[in-house]
Every structure is written in structure tokens, then in C-alpha cells.
Image (cartoon, rainbow, N blue to C red; front, side):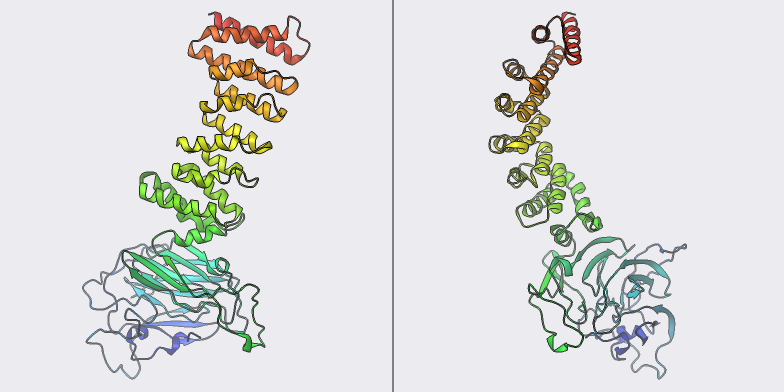
Length: 491
């Protein structure tokens, strides 16, 4: 169990320099003692309050950042020389103090800032304070439903971690979040309890994230403690059932999209979509970045092929409609025969300009039936795919709903072959009406292109079919349209 902040020993000077001297379950006082400078450099930033608070230039002052639990060396000791040892009997001079809520974790100090992670009421709170004055620079909160089964307070156990221009928190409920150190903006987050099926075992999340440099990547390692299927929290009176769980470490890339994509895999409608904002931003950025586009398409393809939620697949299809290339066509094509996913897969394929997308739709047209076939017809027409005219024309004499959809599509494509297919079709009722409307559309297109003879032939055929004495309102409207068309084609 992680110890309260009051357990820091005097020999561990950076811990003692910005440590708590009083730790209670519901009320904590943070006391900052600065007998020497702990900071190597400082970056300017604006305060979250009404007035700006300037960060002093600490670059010329001796010291070291203490941005993670146990400090930069990982052993809780400072390597600084020239520190006052032993301390004065009364301890270092108190420079400032502030009230802190529930929690067990130490603060983190870097770049002239001090980060405090605690709980106030139903919210977990992260504050960024001016390290020398205690002035608040920014504050962020999020609601938590964590309740300790064994009566301990519900505050954070894991210390915040400052990694360059980012700060990480790991709440007791399992929410791992990365924020911008400058202003607290959320960059990504993942609910590890949901993503890895964690059952609360004893103390909630109590491990501080570890940031490791691996080549050109910085990885965030956290023990998630995922549970075996069927696991349940132990009852408070059965501490003998508390045990280690099956899964261990999970690594996220600090700078990329690993965490948001983990959230996306299990995403459902109604969930907080803010966790997906890094993906949204990456999709926008991908328009000018071929490497990023390729990476996103690979990730999206994996989600479409895998066991992701329906909401996740729909989200992916919308994004691929924006940035998809031929590389995404196979994953989308695999969904065209699915009642649940065909519509959104078509939505993406309609908008992907690669010829492979049209070919995938034409292939599916010959395989699917019913409403799915109608969908393929509509998508091919929306793409303006003239290569599909023959296949669509062959559907004019079949199922009435499919035939009507085929007629409408040919009226959208408006090629000479489309007009010929419509002219040769035999139909009655709604299908006949759809064919007539499509032929009128083809004639209008021919006039616009200057082919008045072809347009005139269509209008004369339609006028003759209606007859000199139309019997219904529709027949009268069609005769008027054909007559006006003949006048237009004669000009």
C-alpha cells in the first residue's frame, strides 16, 4: 500500500522540499520548504486565474527536477551537492502552503511547476501550482465513482508524472490521462478498468506510471491488473480472497495514438467522445502527412477487421470517408455483406476516390441481395460510376424495389448506355414511373451536352407512350414535361 506523503524522510531532500507535513483522510496540508532550488529550467505560461503568474527563469539556478515518484534517480535520493545537512532542528523554512483534499500521493515538481493530484468531493483534481509561490496556474477535474471497499479514502494513490511537456495521472478508478503541462489540456486518456476488464481487488490503482525512453519513442508503462473472466470484488470481511490478478503491464506511446485507439475499440454511443479527440485531430493533420495517413489507415483497418464495437466501426468508416485510400478498401469491402455495417462501409467507399473502391462496390453488387443490393446501386450512382451501367441496367426487370432503384441510378448516371437500357425496359406501376423519370433526366443531360437529337428522341417516345389524352395527374405532368423538352430540343 503506498504510504502517505508525511512518510518522506529528511534524507530524501527533494521529497522533503515539497512535501506534506500533515496527512489526514479528509484534510491535508501541503507545505513547501525551499532551502535550495530544485529546478533546472522554467517555461513561461499563463495562470488559469484572472491574473497571469510569471514563471521565474530558473535556468541559472542549481537544482534538479523531481517530476516522478522517487525522483529522477528512481531511488528517492538527490545527487545534488552543497545541500544543508543536517537540516535545522525546526526543519527548513516554510515558504508557502495550501490545502489538499483526499489522497495518498506525493506531488511532482518540474520546470518551475508543482503538480498536486487529490480528490475533492466526487471529483479527482489535478492542480498546477507555481513552485516558488504556490499560486495556481491551472486546475482540471473529472468525476470519479471510485469507492474504497475497505474504508480507506477515495483519493488518488498514484503520484502525477511530469514527462517533458506532458503530465500523466493514474486515478484510483483506473483512468490514465495525459495532459499538456502548459495549460492542462487533455491530450489522451484511457479507462484501463473498462479496456482490460479490471475487477476492483483491494486498494484501487496505486502504482505510479513509469515513462521509459525506447529508441525514439517514450513509453508509458502501467500495471492494469486485468481480471480473469467471472472475477468479482472480494467482500470486505474476506481479505483472505485478495490476490494478484492475471494481467500485468501495458505500455502506451506517450506521443502517439495508442491510448485513444484502445478507448475506440470498446467505444459505444453515449460514451464521452472527448477521449477520441486526438484521433480526430490526427485525421485532420493526415491531409498533409502521408506517413500519418498510412498509420491511421492501418489502425482503422485493424479495428474494422477485429472485434470492435459497432459504434467504433461506424466512427472508423466516417474517418476513412475523409482520408481513406486504396489501402483501406479491403477492410471496408469485407463489411459490405453485413446487415449491421454495410451502410457505413458504403458511406466510406462512396467518398474514396481510388478506382478500387468502385470495383469493390461493383463486386458486392453481384453478391448481395435485397436492401443491401439497393444500397450498392445507390452508392455506385453517387460515385458516378459509368462502368456499372451494364450491371445496373440488368436489374431493371427483376424485383420491383431493386428495379426502381436501378432506374433511379441510371437517371443519375445519364450516359447513352443508361438511356438505351431504360428505353428497352418493360415495366408497370412504380417501376415504370421510375424509368420514365430517369429517361427525362437523361434527356435533360443530353440537351446540356448539346446532343439535341438524342434528347428529342427520348421526349417523343415518352409523349407517345402517354398518349394524346392522359388520364391521371402524373400522366398529364409527364406529357407537359415531354412537350417542354421537345421545345427545348428544337431551339
